[in-house]
Image (cartoon, rainbow, N blue to C red):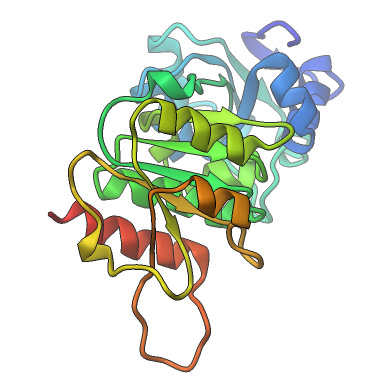
Length: 263
Protein backbone atom coordinates (compact mmCIF):
# COMPACT_ATOMS: atom_id res chain seq x y z
CA UNK A 1 0.00 0.00 0.00
CA UNK A 2 1.22 3.52 -0.80
CA UNK A 3 2.51 5.09 2.41
CA UNK A 4 0.14 7.10 4.61
CA UNK A 5 -0.03 10.86 4.19
CA UNK A 6 -0.67 13.55 6.78
CA UNK A 7 -1.88 16.97 5.65
CA UNK A 8 -2.60 18.15 2.12
CA UNK A 9 -2.93 15.45 -0.55
CA UNK A 10 -2.59 16.54 -4.19
CA UNK A 11 -5.17 15.47 -6.75
CA UNK A 12 -2.56 13.41 -8.62
CA UNK A 13 -1.16 11.71 -5.55
CA UNK A 14 -0.38 7.98 -5.93
CA UNK A 15 -2.38 7.51 -2.73
CA UNK A 16 -5.58 8.65 -4.45
CA UNK A 17 -4.90 6.37 -7.41
CA UNK A 18 -4.50 3.47 -4.99
CA UNK A 19 -7.70 4.35 -3.15
CA UNK A 20 -9.67 4.39 -6.40
CA UNK A 21 -8.29 0.94 -7.26
CA UNK A 22 -9.14 -0.40 -3.81
CA UNK A 23 -12.76 0.58 -4.37
CA UNK A 24 -12.88 -1.44 -7.61
CA UNK A 25 -10.45 -4.33 -7.34
CA UNK A 26 -11.06 -7.29 -5.07
CA UNK A 27 -7.67 -8.77 -5.94
CA UNK A 28 -5.87 -5.63 -4.79
CA UNK A 29 -7.79 -5.57 -1.51
CA UNK A 30 -6.73 -9.15 -0.85
CA UNK A 31 -3.16 -8.63 -2.01
CA UNK A 32 -2.62 -5.63 0.25
CA UNK A 33 -4.86 -6.78 3.09
CA UNK A 34 -6.77 -3.51 3.21
CA UNK A 35 -10.18 -2.17 2.24
CA UNK A 36 -12.05 1.10 1.89
CA UNK A 37 -14.58 2.50 4.37
CA UNK A 38 -16.80 5.35 3.15
CA UNK A 39 -18.68 7.98 5.14
CA UNK A 40 -17.97 9.77 8.42
CA UNK A 41 -20.22 7.53 10.51
CA UNK A 42 -18.57 4.32 9.33
CA UNK A 43 -15.08 5.78 9.62
CA UNK A 44 -15.88 6.80 13.19
CA UNK A 45 -17.26 3.30 13.86
CA UNK A 46 -14.07 1.68 12.57
CA UNK A 47 -11.97 3.90 14.83
CA UNK A 48 -14.23 3.25 17.83
CA UNK A 49 -14.10 -0.51 17.25
CA UNK A 50 -10.33 -0.44 17.44
CA UNK A 51 -9.75 -1.59 13.88
CA UNK A 52 -6.39 -0.91 12.30
CA UNK A 53 -7.17 2.26 10.40
CA UNK A 54 -4.15 3.09 8.24
CA UNK A 55 -5.27 6.30 6.56
CA UNK A 56 -8.17 8.74 6.79
CA UNK A 57 -9.01 11.10 3.92
CA UNK A 58 -11.45 13.99 4.06
CA UNK A 59 -12.35 16.81 1.64
CA UNK A 60 -11.25 20.34 2.40
CA UNK A 61 -14.87 21.21 3.22
CA UNK A 62 -14.84 18.70 6.11
CA UNK A 63 -11.32 19.38 7.37
CA UNK A 64 -12.63 20.80 10.65
CA UNK A 65 -15.02 17.92 11.30
CA UNK A 66 -15.10 15.35 14.05
CA UNK A 67 -13.60 12.57 11.94
CA UNK A 68 -10.31 14.45 11.59
CA UNK A 69 -10.14 15.01 15.34
CA UNK A 70 -10.96 11.36 16.08
CA UNK A 71 -8.36 10.13 13.61
CA UNK A 72 -5.65 12.32 15.07
CA UNK A 73 -6.54 11.27 18.62
CA UNK A 74 -6.05 7.68 17.47
CA UNK A 75 -2.73 8.53 15.84
CA UNK A 76 -4.06 7.84 12.34
CA UNK A 77 -2.64 9.94 9.46
CA UNK A 78 -5.32 12.23 8.04
CA UNK A 79 -5.04 13.57 4.50
CA UNK A 80 -6.94 16.63 3.27
CA UNK A 81 -8.05 16.49 -0.38
CA UNK A 82 -9.62 19.21 -2.54
CA UNK A 83 -13.35 18.61 -2.88
CA UNK A 84 -13.21 17.92 -6.63
CA UNK A 85 -10.65 15.09 -6.56
CA UNK A 86 -12.18 13.73 -3.36
CA UNK A 87 -15.56 13.31 -5.05
CA UNK A 88 -13.94 10.95 -7.54
CA UNK A 89 -12.82 8.60 -4.76
CA UNK A 90 -16.22 7.54 -3.48
CA UNK A 91 -18.38 4.77 -4.91
CA UNK A 92 -21.70 6.34 -3.91
CA UNK A 93 -23.83 8.77 -5.91
CA UNK A 94 -23.73 11.31 -3.10
CA UNK A 95 -20.19 12.34 -2.16
CA UNK A 96 -19.06 11.14 1.25
CA UNK A 97 -17.33 13.42 3.76
CA UNK A 98 -14.69 10.91 4.85
CA UNK A 99 -12.87 7.80 3.68
CA UNK A 100 -10.58 5.41 5.50
CA UNK A 101 -8.21 2.65 4.47
CA UNK A 102 -8.57 -0.16 7.01
CA UNK A 103 -6.64 -3.41 7.42
CA UNK A 104 -8.69 -6.55 6.76
CA UNK A 105 -9.45 -8.48 9.93
CA UNK A 106 -10.87 -11.90 9.08
CA UNK A 107 -9.72 -14.86 11.16
CA UNK A 108 -9.44 -18.63 10.57
CA UNK A 109 -12.70 -20.52 11.07
CA UNK A 110 -11.25 -22.32 14.09
CA UNK A 111 -10.73 -18.98 15.85
CA UNK A 112 -14.38 -17.90 15.70
CA UNK A 113 -15.90 -17.76 19.19
CA UNK A 114 -18.44 -20.25 20.48
CA UNK A 115 -22.05 -19.43 19.78
CA UNK A 116 -24.48 -19.04 16.90
CA UNK A 117 -22.74 -18.66 13.53
CA UNK A 118 -23.91 -17.80 10.02
CA UNK A 119 -22.36 -19.11 6.80
CA UNK A 120 -22.89 -17.04 3.66
CA UNK A 121 -22.41 -19.68 0.98
CA UNK A 122 -21.58 -18.29 -2.48
CA UNK A 123 -23.80 -15.23 -2.06
CA UNK A 124 -23.63 -13.00 -5.13
CA UNK A 125 -25.08 -9.69 -3.95
CA UNK A 126 -22.92 -7.56 -1.63
CA UNK A 127 -25.97 -5.72 -0.32
CA UNK A 128 -27.55 -8.98 0.84
CA UNK A 129 -24.29 -10.13 2.40
CA UNK A 130 -23.84 -6.86 4.26
CA UNK A 131 -27.43 -6.90 5.51
CA UNK A 132 -26.91 -10.41 6.89
CA UNK A 133 -23.75 -9.37 8.72
CA UNK A 134 -25.76 -6.52 10.23
CA UNK A 135 -28.59 -8.87 11.24
CA UNK A 136 -26.13 -11.40 12.65
CA UNK A 137 -24.76 -8.79 15.03
CA UNK A 138 -28.23 -7.48 15.89
CA UNK A 139 -29.49 -10.92 16.91
CA UNK A 140 -26.43 -11.92 18.89
CA UNK A 141 -24.54 -14.22 16.53
CA UNK A 142 -20.96 -14.97 17.51
CA UNK A 143 -19.58 -14.62 14.00
CA UNK A 144 -20.02 -14.95 10.25
CA UNK A 145 -18.28 -17.17 7.71
CA UNK A 146 -18.17 -15.88 4.13
CA UNK A 147 -17.54 -18.92 1.92
CA UNK A 148 -17.04 -18.09 -1.75
CA UNK A 149 -19.05 -15.57 -3.72
CA UNK A 150 -19.15 -11.97 -2.59
CA UNK A 151 -16.20 -10.10 -1.11
CA UNK A 152 -17.21 -8.92 2.39
CA UNK A 153 -14.80 -6.00 1.92
CA UNK A 154 -16.61 -4.77 -1.20
CA UNK A 155 -17.59 -1.12 -0.55
CA UNK A 156 -21.31 -1.85 -1.02
CA UNK A 157 -21.13 -4.74 1.42
CA UNK A 158 -19.22 -2.66 3.96
CA UNK A 159 -21.89 0.06 3.80
CA UNK A 160 -24.72 -2.47 4.16
CA UNK A 161 -23.23 -3.84 7.38
CA UNK A 162 -23.80 -0.43 9.02
CA UNK A 163 -20.66 -0.89 11.11
CA UNK A 164 -21.30 -4.49 12.20
CA UNK A 165 -18.37 -5.62 10.06
CA UNK A 166 -15.98 -3.85 12.43
CA UNK A 167 -17.35 -5.56 15.53
CA UNK A 168 -18.40 -9.08 14.50
CA UNK A 169 -15.76 -11.83 14.08
CA UNK A 170 -15.46 -12.86 10.44
CA UNK A 171 -13.90 -15.79 8.60
CA UNK A 172 -13.43 -15.72 4.83
CA UNK A 173 -12.82 -18.73 2.58
CA UNK A 174 -12.10 -18.26 -1.11
CA UNK A 175 -11.14 -20.43 -4.04
CA UNK A 176 -12.28 -23.87 -5.14
CA UNK A 177 -15.04 -25.51 -3.08
CA UNK A 178 -14.97 -22.75 -0.48
CA UNK A 179 -18.42 -23.75 0.78
CA UNK A 180 -17.47 -27.41 1.16
CA UNK A 181 -14.26 -26.53 2.95
CA UNK A 182 -16.10 -24.20 5.32
CA UNK A 183 -18.67 -26.85 6.21
CA UNK A 184 -15.97 -29.49 6.68
CA UNK A 185 -13.99 -27.20 8.98
CA UNK A 186 -17.08 -26.40 11.04
CA UNK A 187 -18.03 -30.07 11.19
CA UNK A 188 -14.56 -30.98 12.42
CA UNK A 189 -15.05 -28.43 15.20
CA UNK A 190 -18.27 -30.17 16.25
CA UNK A 191 -20.53 -27.36 15.11
CA UNK A 192 -23.91 -28.54 13.76
CA UNK A 193 -24.70 -26.91 10.41
CA UNK A 194 -28.31 -26.28 9.43
CA UNK A 195 -28.95 -25.62 5.75
CA UNK A 196 -31.62 -23.08 4.87
CA UNK A 197 -33.99 -24.36 2.16
CA UNK A 198 -37.14 -22.88 0.63
CA UNK A 199 -39.26 -25.87 1.59
CA UNK A 200 -39.01 -29.24 3.28
CA UNK A 201 -36.98 -28.22 6.32
CA UNK A 202 -37.95 -28.11 9.98
CA UNK A 203 -39.44 -25.02 11.57
CA UNK A 204 -36.75 -22.68 12.98
CA UNK A 205 -38.08 -23.32 16.49
CA UNK A 206 -37.07 -26.98 16.11
CA UNK A 207 -33.38 -26.23 15.57
CA UNK A 208 -31.66 -27.25 18.83
CA UNK A 209 -30.14 -24.37 20.76
CA UNK A 210 -27.30 -26.56 22.06
CA UNK A 211 -24.76 -27.03 20.78
CA UNK A 212 -24.99 -23.61 19.18
CA UNK A 213 -26.10 -24.04 15.55
CA UNK A 214 -24.57 -22.77 12.34
CA UNK A 215 -27.12 -21.36 9.88
CA UNK A 216 -26.04 -21.89 6.27
CA UNK A 217 -27.54 -19.53 3.68
CA UNK A 218 -27.12 -20.26 -0.01
CA UNK A 219 -26.71 -18.38 -3.26
CA UNK A 220 -29.66 -16.09 -4.08
CA UNK A 221 -31.03 -17.68 -7.26
CA UNK A 222 -29.87 -21.27 -6.75
CA UNK A 223 -29.71 -22.00 -3.03
CA UNK A 224 -27.31 -24.60 -1.68
CA UNK A 225 -25.98 -27.40 -3.90
CA UNK A 226 -26.69 -31.03 -2.99
CA UNK A 227 -23.12 -31.63 -1.85
CA UNK A 228 -23.47 -28.82 0.69
CA UNK A 229 -26.84 -30.11 1.92
CA UNK A 230 -25.29 -33.54 2.46
CA UNK A 231 -22.64 -32.03 4.74
CA UNK A 232 -25.26 -30.41 7.00
CA UNK A 233 -26.87 -31.77 10.14
CA UNK A 234 -30.36 -30.86 8.96
CA UNK A 235 -32.55 -28.56 6.89
CA UNK A 236 -34.52 -25.55 8.13
CA UNK A 237 -37.24 -23.56 6.38
CA UNK A 238 -38.88 -20.24 7.19
CA UNK A 239 -42.63 -20.99 7.00
CA UNK A 240 -44.58 -18.66 4.69
CA UNK A 241 -48.22 -18.45 3.64
CA UNK A 242 -48.07 -16.18 0.58
CA UNK A 243 -47.96 -17.15 -3.08
CA UNK A 244 -44.27 -16.39 -3.54
CA UNK A 245 -42.01 -19.42 -3.81
CA UNK A 246 -39.21 -18.10 -1.58
CA UNK A 247 -37.88 -15.18 0.44
CA UNK A 248 -34.96 -12.95 -0.39
CA UNK A 249 -31.88 -14.48 1.28
CA UNK A 250 -31.30 -11.44 3.50
CA UNK A 251 -34.92 -11.54 4.68
CA UNK A 252 -34.91 -15.31 5.24
CA UNK A 253 -31.60 -15.17 7.07
CA UNK A 254 -32.71 -12.33 9.31
CA UNK A 255 -35.94 -14.13 10.23
CA UNK A 256 -33.99 -17.31 10.99
CA UNK A 257 -31.49 -15.46 13.13
CA UNK A 258 -34.28 -13.90 15.16
CA UNK A 259 -36.12 -17.20 15.57
CA UNK A 260 -33.07 -19.25 16.51
CA UNK A 261 -31.40 -16.65 18.72
CA UNK A 262 -34.60 -15.89 20.66
CA UNK A 263 -34.43 -19.08 22.73
